Length: 291
Image 1 (tube, one colour):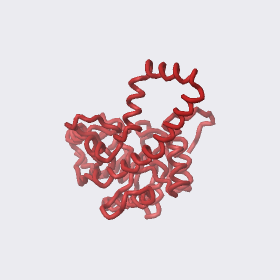
Image 2 (cartoon, one colour):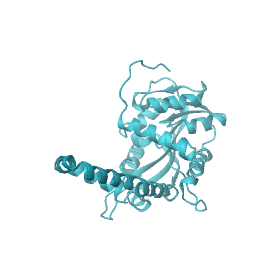
Image 3 (cartoon, helix red, strand yellow):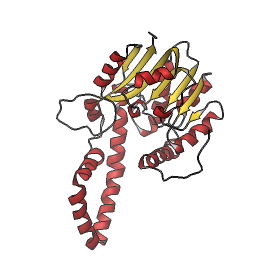
Image 4 (cartoon, helix red, strand yellow):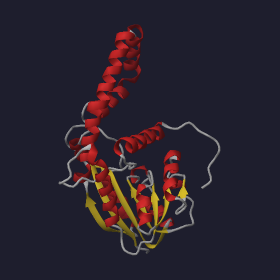
């Protein structure tokens, strides 16, 4: 894959991906960036997260349709799923818009597959596959016109596997502490309108993925909140002349953003219950049936 020699400053999302990957590798001994799949008999803990993530990948492999040989992994993350599929004898190419994750993925592909360093909407046409895989990447794909785009990269009768969370309507009166995800009802509408795609399988795995939010909440409350409080206490005690006007200006100009950050990350609302109120983690397997 050709790379530009021109360097650009990494985005906040890119930095976040790097931090998550580094922390996972050195603290948890995993380079997964996916949710874990938690069966009832697996205790929810950071120590068990790598096992839950392996079970997530196993779940996807267990639902691969017959007749699939070539796979395009769209939004491949660190290439973990692609590596697993290659080891099982599949031919796999990957799509990743992240420069950092692309380097990690290339180290796993080892020349066994091609890596397209772009977003799905900019993917060159030409090569076609038996299946397109969207593992927690579908939420980043533009929904309008998506089924027409699928057909450009699928062999006749090809399949599309989607594993991701979607937004649902909630009557709880509580705000969602987590953004992202297409509206589930809108996805169903687009699928019905597409006509040439038949739903082969649909599984709601919300109960198996929501426990990940317990780990997120525990980490935020036991690590992030104390660090924030310590920094603010240190700043307010030793830099009073600077702290007071800075705090006042921040509230004046960034009040809504600060309130949003407080609710999402420090209020304890980012938990399994809130996730299940506003999201559905769905598995879809679709088959293209040419007209």
